[in-house]
Image 1: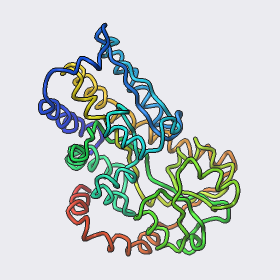
Image 2 (image 1 turned 120 degrees about the horizontal axis):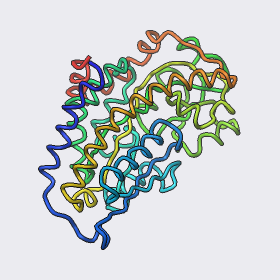
Image 3 (image 1 turned 90 degrees about the vertical axis):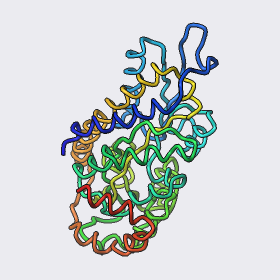
Image 4 (image 1 turned 60 degrees about the vertical axis):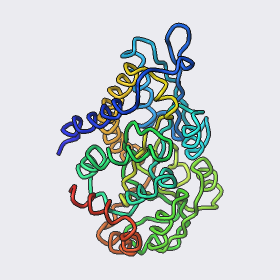
Length: 333
């Protein structure tokens, strides 16, 4: 199923939420000219697929609202960590946050099912999951933790880099000190492969690799490229061990303060962004691998069947906890 074929279902879910969100507006959010200024933040680079798509979304919203809604976009953790941004949205101190699924799992534990290694088998499978009923269900669940889910964008399949050696097999991963997010499943994944996972904020990872405190990290190719990882790591293995998304969140306080017309604008612009960001992400991901090779990165393609087998214990450990979601993911293939 192509990504655009899922658009009708996705926007239907957003618009259904509009009808349930209540009417009217909090006049304090608008100025005397009927305009509103919002802030949107993320922690990654501005020139990645996510950063570019945030800027395009903001421009689209401004144009379609005829200038009523102006969104200022902040990149590179200017407004704090992803957890900071999530909590700021809950409190209404930040209007829109774009955060990784792994961090959001601390607020909605079931999201952690998507972090299990090799449960998403390709981009077509990913689109069926996140652009379909499963994705809409998880966006709705965010309401339970004082968050408004606007959309789910692609970060991409994660790959391993390091400064020590080529990775051609699961055996080669053993002993490497790898920066991971503060996520239990990601830590268990690398322990299962014999590596030493080191939970660390992304903002600290480059310096840690530069100083030799850690050997490497794992991220989608575009993130690796745009954050200059090639300067400190010369080996990349296309492991594609986890498919990562980012959730676009809005503060309920902000959402409920907007007019119905402006909610409609944001929902429609977000639906367009959901599609465009995925297309851009995949184009940039392929280009990033080539760019990294040109910059001196040695890229290898280890047999994923071996990596899948070595990480089966991780899927087994969490399988019972997330059985319903994992069954739905499998059925969406």
